[in-house]
Image 1 (cartoon, rainbow, N blue to C red):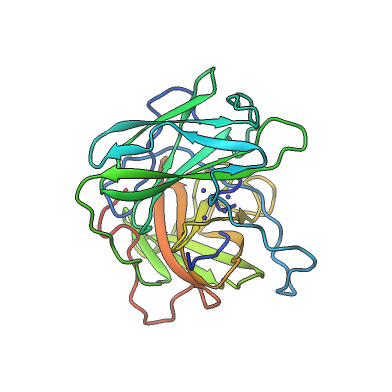
Image 2 (cartoon, one colour):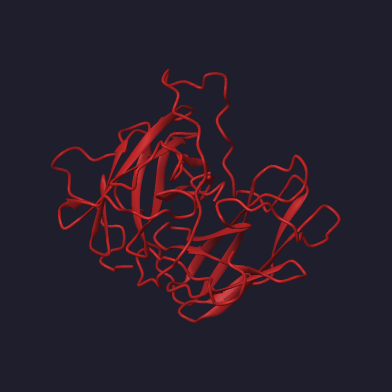
Length: 320
């Protein structure tokens, strides 16, 4: 996802920068805090090296994505703005150009033409979906949102047009039913999912690029045979709490380029555009299955919990 840990950018006091198959039926990916279906492929993108000076080094902070439904003449036309919680539905949308025509040609990035993320407004439910594109430019994917409330849909793509830049367009999605919002999970340096423990180390600093390192383990032992997933050993999506801004996160190195190895450490370069709370969603692949670990971190402070701090749980006890 070249805007997704750019979900490789992601909710209102949150500002960090951490992240289709053809044919309907390959759409549903992991869900955090709810029993999720397994998913098989997502995205990540190459990243610049963290700046040793800790400053901008002449580079402006990447803008947060997903806050606008239209940008650079392109518009996200969400044809399914409402679904019913707990019921399987088909999410349909089209990307239109400045003339209102459906876009039918895209650059393939991290193995996909378009990456789709759906996140609840309280950042408790997260899904990474794989939509299929029809010849007329209409995208569709099955979706089953377990809880009622407000959601944000993020479409991350680059049009197949000379000098076109990567875009993340966002639109609101409502799931009907009884709604009880949840509090943002407390910051923690450890998340657990499907028998794995993932620890995050590093710091998010507003306006400054920094490195985030994530270490995957199982049964107390480091996992050293992670499998490539969307061109890297992990895919990270970052959303700012409050407005669900989709932020830019870049994996450091790619499999086979001589700069990475298959775990247990996964490294990303991230920039927080503002101080605040962020929710990070890490997708990683092991033994043929993709798992998702979720963290709450605060920009301006250490990303990892201090020794002795209670460990956080990414899925409230539900595995992937």
